[in-house]
Image 1 (cartoon, rainbow, N blue to C red):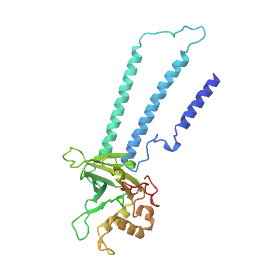
Image 2: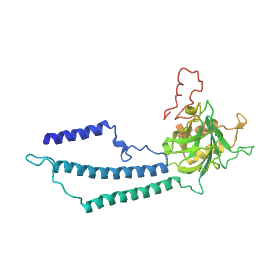
Image 3: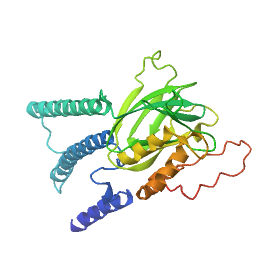
Image 4: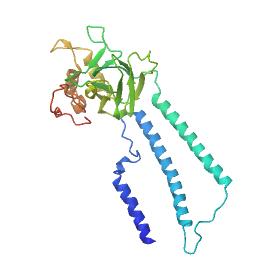
Length: 314
């Protein structure tokens, strides 16, 4: 019997080791680290659900193994254990408990979903996100470029990844639309994805959502809806910076660059902010640090080499 218990213990340890789990994953239980408060709310729900499921599993497993041991066949015992009729109280408990668990899960599912999809009537920043084959156009509502009546826009090209600069610890509202086909706005670090439709009002879709970024950083964004030939190259970057850095960036984007006599581009503004704020470092990199433009040459034989500054999720 002692050898059996040792073997069972070794099997449990081997299962834990071979699963690839890390103590760093606790208490997330495999849920990725989120960059937004909404993602953190989903992670809390996931962790609580995992713990509840684990508790139920341990109880069920305990009852099973208790039956295996208590009612196992012994020497000189009958071939089958003693048979009993139905036990109404036990059956009622086994029926009622799952209903209670389902009701609790339903309540927390709805409350979490409502919290994630809640729209603050007065967000700190509003961004117009326009998808097109095969890139992104980010417009900052409430801004005006000097000498024009146009708002500030960051538009990606085949040679440059668009970088969406946002203030940290602020409520950001995204309004999604498409110029052509259905795309999908997906930032894995947000734990959130929403399809981008042309004419969302005619498709009866809610094209708005909000996030509150709770720490600075840069995260890759992707199109998650197969949209054509260069779908895989349709990447972008979201960068959360301190509020003063964000304001300095927006102020420059609304001005004319004396060197070019043209409005500051995103990369020019970031480079200038980096000079004015040396503490900004990588957050003020003129180009994306989490991804890079993919080859659009269909005849290319090799993949492009990542730039030296790209260190994140490509």
